[in-house]
Length: 218
Length: 218
Image (tube, rainbow over all chains, first blue to last red; front, side, top):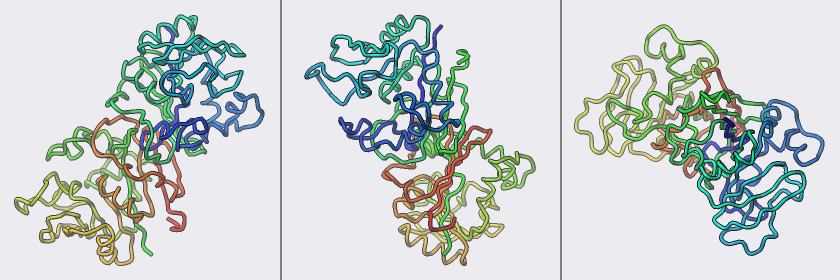
């Protein structure tokens, strides 16, 4: 059975995974880039943008497992863009330019479906109004036996955790107090008990916490 | 100038430092002992209780800095006991038995002052209705030039952080989702920026995060 995975998901000490006030210029609201500084420093991030440079330490090694064995992604609409409500037009195709880093089908959860968009490099955005279970069914079908990544944002990851659909959860605790935004863990008391847990701090100061469902081998 | 320190302060992934429903049998409410398992395994904890045993790894080494150079503690009333409102009598002298592990003056913040209680081993409990600043003034005077520890619970630590009175904050991130209880970080957006920060994960799976005020040398 293919697994459902979350990777490189930064969370502040107070449990926020994104800030308040998302806009075109601020995908993570008032958090700016602070939750993801550790990632911006990695070679994986640079490669994802078609650039050279970046560090090749443990942060990079862990971040780099992001794409391995993934056949489809599911993301929430707020990861896809800053718009809310009905689409004014279909010009917006995500934050990532003409060649997004996914290179697989990507299912965007939205109450306002629109035609699929085929991008360069193998990424196709599909827009679906679906429960987590139904979205996962479609993503699994598209993934051809490979794993499915839940890409975020926090509300989407939280919904998939609440539905007990996640087998592998990699979060990155960033030692900052964000104060406001969207919390990851609300309503998930005791969710850690489903998983085997491994933690490691890296020189960047973040802590990688990986929760793997015991029976998944993940 | 003596420093103000917090030590061994466990916090869940969702930012709770104690559970819901404190009672005589459950000092940490529904959290039980899970936030402090890492500490119960240490030699420091065993010694604190006059017992032998316990591990001597990094958890122990870090935990053991708790008492060094401390001349007084300030704690909230909910750390001292489960009672709320006016004292029914003065029989309760804390959770710790006749010889508490503090061995210094301890200032208990309460809206219901009562006579001081001298315990065995050098601990004296003083009960004061005071602002953080005034409590610290009294504790510093009692500490004779040594440092003052803010012992908790979370509301007390939060109030001292909000008043910018803490120089050294050692928290322990425990990879569990507590779901409810008392949050440490509410209202403290950006508090991390005051400090230099060091993090380390230990084999018990917790992450020790130490925040030291830059100019304190702490």
